Image (tube, rainbow, N blue to C red; front, side, top):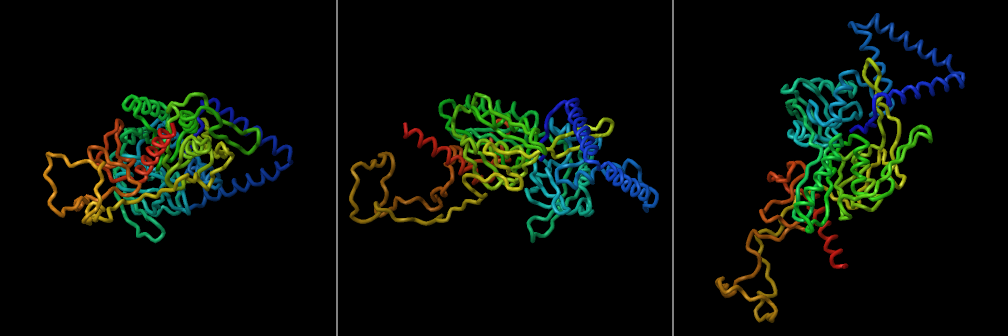
Length: 469
């Protein structure tokens, strides 16, 4: 769930150097250098006492790394220290391929909270859901571990197993799942057509996202041509990723205007990102799907398209991560992930701890046929009912109905549920967000009520526009 400013190492080091220079100037100008040194002496005293008297032997590297990480993690849940291995893992992850369980997590009240599982990964296949709390790893309590320590325990050789104890909901009973670590290849963009609607799902924002989005739009336009009525952009359970990719995805659907702004500790450190001319969707209506697992970069996209009235946002309240983390390399060691700014939607709204509020709130639901098996009488069934001369005559090849037979639907053929999209000719309901492949064939997934509502909405908008002309 990280938003990382992509910059060359040299640029990051320049930023770090400027930061150190600024701090030094402040200390000297305010005359607090003696207090600073007193606090550093305190740290040195504690370090020496732990080093000499702790019950088990520790290395200086362990103590220093833990001290640095403790300083950073005490600031907010997203700042932390990355040792050399963690830094390398993070760089690999932003390129779209990494090893692990395929789960994005954060820390909450000393426990590991699932932000979202990544599609088609061990965590996803095991059924982990946004909001789940991981309380044990291989039988050991998570409480007391830092986020980095817990993540390190979840990593391991590909093919090895780990037992994860999960609590779902406030009063839920803990349950245990066994996950097999795997190489996680994140296919950032997946797409297909749903009748006359283009469906595009972005699972995370990595270096391949914009390229994948452009390929998806081009393919959908080629398949549907003039029949294309609009797009569903599915950002559900998308934990975020690279800031520049979020800006680029937003720009894909916008002709002009601000996409997002970031504001740091000082007013002069603010940055604005604006759209360039060119809407690849050619002005067709867009519905963005979000939920509680949509965080960070996905909230930037949803907020930008919502504020510019370029898309309707449908679903449930998003996660609410409105801060920017800068990765600052530390030569010879690793890097520090430091929260350096908040980001704001084009209307100037910060979503930190609030999230994006959908235009149309739709919760996941299971659609059931309530009148299945009932035969309802209609006007045409009443004795002596007036005939409609415009009514189509029964086909001559069909046997005439027996006297008194009803024209009502046959038992078991109940009408579609309200809000449900018409089923495709092959009988498949709209697919759930996790079941599509790169080219579009659903694999008989459960009915996706939120997607069905989005498809209905787009078809309604297209019908209204057609009649208005």
